[in-house]
Amino acid sequence: ELGDEVGIRESLRDTALVCNRLCGIYINCGRLDEAEKYGRRALTLNEKAAGEINTARARRDLSISYERLGNISKLKNDNKSALEHYERSRRIREELAADETDTRALRDLSAVLTKLGSIYKASGNIAAAECFAQALKIDRSLAEQLKTTQSESDLAVSLIKYGDIHKADGKNDEAAELYHEAVSLCRKTEERTGTARARRERAAACEKLAGAYKRLKKADEAAALYRETVSLREKLAELDPSSRAMHELAAAYYNYASFASDKGMMHKAYLIWDK
Image (cartoon, rainbow, N blue to C red):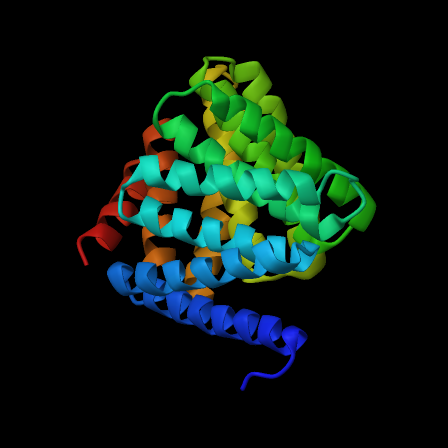
């Protein structure tokens, strides 16, 4: 009834895509059990499709299903299951990105490496450093090739993630170097695009570098970056006074006030938190 073999395969994929969309909707609604149910249905369909035709598209769909289930497991604080799903996605994506010419495959691989790194980092596993280092290498190469806003954003995230690993190891000079590169990149992107997302990423990078300079006893540099973060967060909160933006602004006030012993700035932070 579904037609010839090609039609059957396309029908499998179409049904899996619908399940994935429903999975995403339920994740956004916080209904994780329902999300997992549809995620597993999509996985079953994608496993069948990949087993029958074994094309790059079918294998990518399968890797996405594993990644999606990993996301759900992570939200459920089941890091063991999340790790298993992400590792399966990683193995597929390493095969797809083997020739290093498919930029989408490379970006997919970097994304799952970053997620794996976060899980390993949470458990104190040294494999986190390797994952973040590999993701950084990929993202640096893609940024140089593509020169797009997205590729630059991905590179900035990888620089910060790998910087965090150095910070955790007490290597503040190395962390500061990576954060500094991220700040420079985010400044250029925000000045060029003027988007709220770019401004938020710039603020986050400045905050990281300010903390690194604070630990390195570079007070003037740290103070300037804390002030820059406050200015950026104020602009974001003015344009969109959401609870997230206000919380981030309060945190920026607090961080600067704690560093500079500024009672007025501390008062601003508590005014927001008391609302």
